[in-house]
Image 1 (cartoon, rainbow, N blue to C red):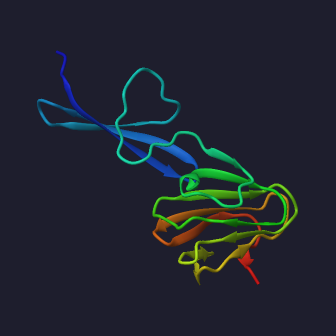
Image 2 (image 1 turned 45 degrees about the vertical axis):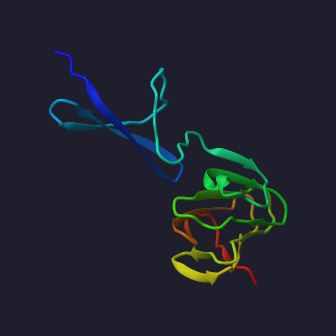
Amino acid sequence: MIKKIAAITFVILFMCFMSKIAFSVQDGGSGNANTEYFSGPISGSSTITAAGTLHGLIEIIADDNSLSAAQCYGSANKLNGAETTTLPAAVAGMNVLLYSDDATVKTIDPNGNDHIWLNGVDLTAGVSINSPGAVGDYIVLVAFADNNWYSVGQSGVWVVTP
């Protein structure tokens, strides 16, 4: 017996640049739903309808000192030279990795109304942070709430900008 599928809902689970897709298939006749999980590339000729933004690959940004909001959803910014990188206003769900490929101090400057939470400490609105100044320094920032960037991973000891 072949049953018609009434609806398919795709949910994207994303954290620290690793993704897994969960989808629920509901039987149109009985209303029963089964959830399946899939990891890996998607191929075929199916249509996916999603609300919001759907991302696949990590966007690699080459040394951009002023990130747009669109660049802060699953991106990695490779920084070079002693510079200040300005973040857009934090919106819940944004996430970005900032990576240094040379031995200079990088300054990360939030929007004036935004807070950076460094190692669990709220640095108050508009306060910038500095990298240690070594090759390979990085920090991953996630906006768990509007106006708040949380450090969820880093190398070296990042500090408040003096």
